[in-house]
Image 1: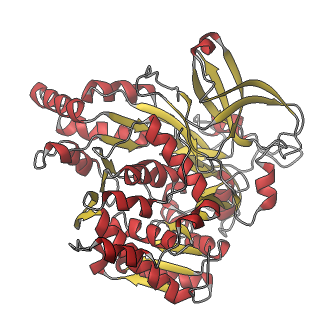
Image 2: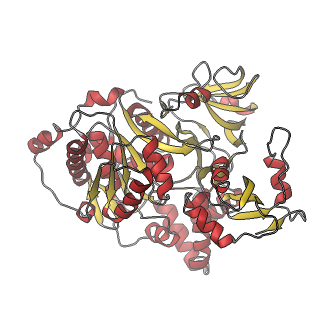
Image 3: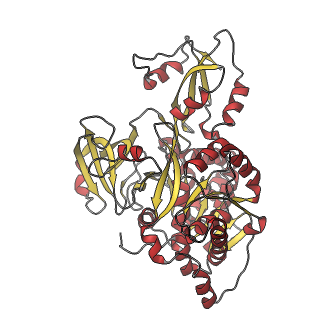
Amino acid sequence: MENRGIIPAHRIALQHLDRVAIKDSHGSHTYLDVLLKAIKLSNMIKSSIGLEKNQERIGFLCPNDSTYVISQWACWAAGHIAVPLSPVHPPSLLGYYVKDCDAALIIASQSHSQLLNAVQETVGQDIKSVILEESWQQTINQNVTPTQLKSILCDTKPMEFYHNSDAMMLYTSGTTGKPKGVLLSHKNIDAQVRMLIEVWEWSKKDVIVHALPLHHTHGVINALLCPLYVGASCIMLPKFDSKAIWENFLNTNVSQEEKPTLFMGVPTMYSKLLSHYDSTYGETQRKREYVKASISNNFRVMISGSAALPEPVFYKWKAATGIEIVERYGMTEIGSVLSIPLEGERRPGYVGVPSPGVSIRLAEFQSSPLGSKANYQILFETSYDQFSKDYANDKVVGDLLIKGPNVFKCYWNKPEATAKDFTADGWFRTGDSVQFDNGYFKILGRLSADIIKSGGFKISALEIETHLLGHPEIADCTVFGIPDVTWGQKVAAVLVLANPEMSIDLIALKQWCKERMAPYIVPSEWRIYSELPRNALGKVNKVEFAKVAFNNNPGSSKL
């Protein structure tokens, strides 16, 4: 990967001012339009928290449209750390993020002003805020001379600032059950984006349909910053909607240059898109042939990540569209470090080879599995530069370790958690068991049974258990994932009621959960037990118990 200086996205925009950066429900927005609004907002940020401040955490609650990019770029232009917040999360969870990162300011769209008020109440103190009126979402055709633009840019940080400063904090759930703030520097983001530009051969001619959440690395780094780094266009949909996505896939009301060339999704998205295809386009041969011809002629790549893609989905998608989905592997802490090469074999269930700049080890730990002092044996080691087809006959299974400029800086204010996830010699421990087989890597699963992968999200079972144990009618509980064709895993909970003679209202319980948890972590499957099979240490063997509890066991009762 070419070695160059760190140039944040809002500065790269100067190379593509007249091109369309974002298309959303409000219209088309050029790079110039987004940049000028971002600089205007950056000045509002500085006026609000002080011109002398640097590297403050700025939370922002924006819909999936141009205001998200404007807010992100504004944080960077002002020299601060962007903390994207999801509007689908309940105020209690958003309040935790705001308090944990010690946000100096929250930017919110007008449509989320009530949610902002609820977050303020949860935090228990007034936090400075900037409300973006609806005019921020509208397209404004602005003419600026080079001299005027140079003068405007004088109000932003100089290029040298970004070489050693932090850029963004994304929250993820760990095995402790508490979400951790993953701090990414501008160098980290630059490395993560540029390696994908090279792997997936991004160019300014590309157009991507974007329907991913924007508080996760998949939606922010892979699907948004990659196109914005090269001057491509991003069609931002308000949310995932199968009908709207297919309409964009097959849009005949735009020029050939405006037609989508890329799509990224999680396996659940592809499964739901196939269901819509079957009911809308799959009924006649003529429709099926039209869809296949349109997709295969216009799209150069479709990518799946955040969870394992079921093999049937891979083959059904290929049959419907003519496209073999590219699978990749990554984490918030490291970006997408493994990907099927565009010119390589698309092998279902495998996530390919190392990305540029990434070094990989498969290891076997010989002492405690936790902490930087754990000793380990290197079973296999390679990197993008060293990777060779000579490995074709090798087959190794081990814990996946990663090193490179893409690896995050730290967990915010959690030095012990940071130290635990790195080896003594500086390698990041992903927590995944990985197999190298016939030239490709394959993810076997989490080393911990407490992480559930559902619909592209990585969910902490311990976090859910903590919430459930706060319910007055629940005495004990355990949570784990059970296999599901559509979601990969479904969140399942086994409860022990405080009063065994009473029942519990499932509808009321689900509503109680939704008021306290993100919607995608609320359990969808429930069982009642008189007691849980805990060992002498008070632990439940979740892998074995899941097989029993959700296999029509007469010792349990369904909710």
